[in-house]
Length: 312
Image (cartoon, rainbow, N blue to C red):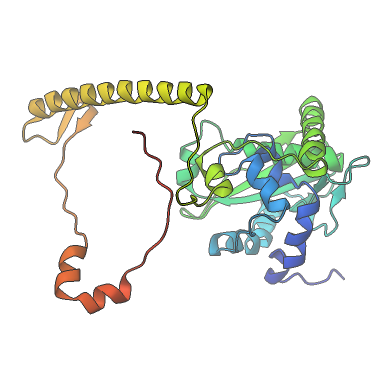
């Protein structure tokens, strides 16, 4: 008899999260290779080095884990295939820091070439609508990483939209040998450079820079080098161009507003080009609240620090 799986078994333990500092998992592959919209190589490195805390569990993340058995059952009933959980990770034969913790293993069955990988994802319709493809590129990297370590020839991706309560048709994904080999080589080089030799990955965006330098040192000044001044000059030129374009944009908008008058929409052959509608909104008047109810204002007032970048 198979042991009973409870929903709590699906949620990663603290020990499991801690162990991830010592290897590269499938969900980190795209970020390490610079192909993720949410994480950067530096952020993955800092997490593995213990320089930033682990992101606390959220209701959305917990839902994804708890909903996995239901998604697996749905896949089985839809496809006529059996799946099973695999507790132990798959480990690369040569590089033990490359590992795969797959959601489910697809057992052999009619219409599939042997055993495969089932990846289960929950998301929102809004996120998918913004994509130019059926699913985020990072999920493809993750599944190919799994296929490389398991040796399986195929995988299925099943997507569930939380906001619309909609299952997508399972996506069949074939093993890409050349893609896997190229990514494996890059991952090995990244691990050698940044985890073994300890070189810090370069920051990729403003979020990275805030992680590295969250606060300024009062009174500290840096003298600009020639290359710094050149970057400053380029920035001021870009800002001037931006201001000119912004002014042109405003002029063009006003011309269209004048055309609209009190109309809501400007259309061409039934297609709306622009709209200028009336909306109502309400907001808290903090100034008035502070003057008339100072004790309430003080009770609910919060403060925080931030770094503001300004160009003189």
